[in-house]
Image (tube, rainbow, N blue to C red):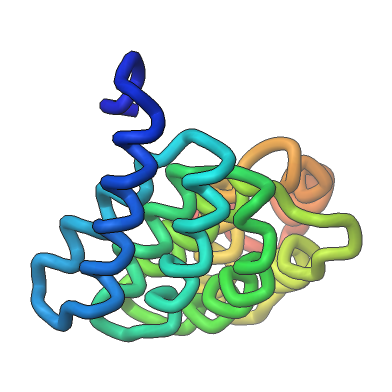
Length: 171
């Protein structure tokens, strides 16, 4: 967004150089570069940046930064990363540290979920899990995904709250 009002050809050249730097570097400054790449707005820049960020989504050290950058872009052009983000959301239900899940779920909400995506129905199923921690994390993750993708979860959340066997404080 900080390129608004600047010559787009200069911005595009800068992003190309930044992409080259990210691909060639192994330093911790890559996190800063990935964060900057998440600020792209032009369609051409997004199309170039999304594959680079996708390469980092599966890397353990820098995946959160890349996921967060994809979420900030929030473009349908980032759709190829949706299956990876869905997998990360569901895998991270069992993790102590919820940062990766938070960024992945938020990115999914901003990018948009395609018809037939199974992450929301899977999270809805977890609302009835015997372990209260999993129920809580599923409800929390649905909130991070947000509207309109997770709107179908509202009736399931209400039904769970009415279940006498489930403590509503677990949500």
